[in-house]
Image 1 (cartoon, rainbow, N blue to C red):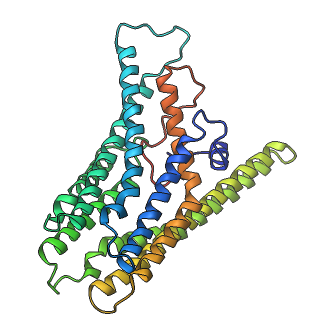
Image 2 (cartoon, rainbow, N blue to C red; image 1 turned 90 degrees about the vertical axis):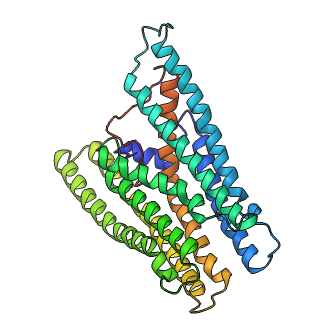
Image 3 (cartoon, rainbow, N blue to C red; image 1 turned 180 degrees about the vertical axis):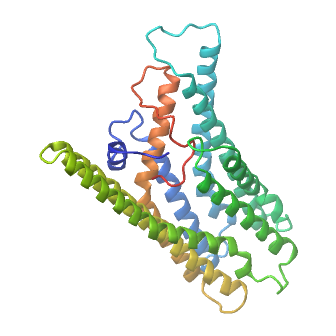
Length: 350
């Protein structure tokens, strides 16, 4: 969801005015901690404690996804209750400024999010089942949910236009999920022992993604800086002595600082996971036996920095989503400022 103006600065600094001050923050931090624990446990499993079962390695991520699934399930139940009141015989209070588009927007977010989380849970469970108890399970079955999610993103990027979706980011996410999953299936299920397809080639979609993200991290702050200069100049010319110019300058600087914080987290993640995959490719291709600790440490550090720098933006985005839920489920008994120009799902948080 694209924030604008003072709203972005306010939300990025905290969620105190939200009706959901804790839940979005808890969910985001839960996911951040869960992924960090999975990486740490995988390092222990591969480097020190071989007896540690794979299901224990993936348990934190599965628990985090199940928590999100429960929250979205509750949201769907509340939406069905709200829809029954809207389209049923129950009258809505005459002083309620109710907007039907909020009901449909909430439905799309709830059902899409619920479906994505279900597919992620199924994929993750099948991956760890293959590692722990079912080694002959074709990887195609485990990664099929990710391919479905990728195809759904590509479909939405092609069919819908802004502000319903953010097509470039949707298309990028969809292509990465689909292409990387397909190449992994080809390598693991059909060419695992073959030297005709190296692991470095298998990870080609990931390399391209890291490169594109680093280019974005280099370009977007320059664009934000130019916009800040233009905004400051126009405000100073229009209000040379007033406090309005100061507020506009402060808002522009806040957006610039938020963008810099975001690109710091994204670039750290891209570099960390890129180095981790490079070390992994060297080990799997038997070019150099890098220790598993050296493979996982860059990924863990990159993820920690991503959570530190970007969790505030993600929390602000989901706080806005939960405020939309609250406004919809209260049938208009809310002062929520609904912006129908905001994307349905946003990966840029900018």
